Image (cartoon, rainbow, N blue to C red; front, side):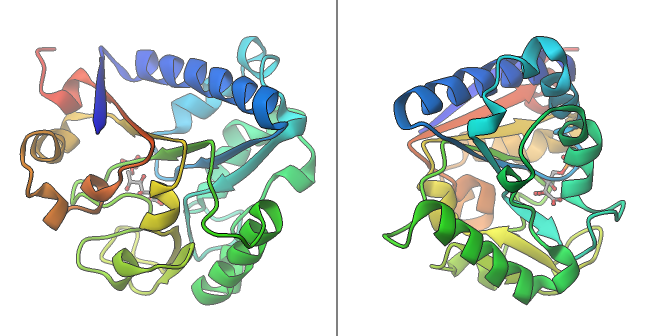
Length: 241
Ligand code: 6PG
């Protein structure tokens, strides 16, 4: 079941996402003593990270009980302009107080295969080895080809039954190997939140919303967690300006 929410612009969407992030974090720590979150890549989450770094938000988040993963990463060093970690570090992590050990960066500099193996180790150390990890909150973006994380249409990673997959020569821009969460780990999450902004996503959002066969074509349509939220601005939903 997908739950769509419309927002007038990127700022309103990011503020609503920040509020949900805080609420989910506090509830998870209250109930289980820990908040496990996977951040998304690409450019969309920049506004959200900047919002979370604001003292009005960051002081309400139990960062010392928060474990930060990524739902995907490019096979690049952490200081690369293409690194999903770098965006989060520049706009959020470097601006808050969080124990270094709570940041489980995907080590893209090792190459996709070894980075995926390291990520599996981090996940097993965090969640144990009894079945698929259950994240409290997973942030995802949407590509104009219907990909999410680094799960691209027609690629092997889509059928991965492991927690993660190495994606070699993906049909993506920028063209570089990647590491991604698999569909099973995404679908095992308590909450998945897609953040979608801009009219370039309008066609794909419309198809995913209205066409039951979209699951056959688009990886993003195959994400169905306990709670699957779609936060989209009017431009992505095709509403009047
Ligand atoms: C990545 C992302 C990818 C991204 C979408 C949307 O590493 O590129 O994880 O899945 O979320 O491509 O990207 P934008 O937010 O830049 O539109």
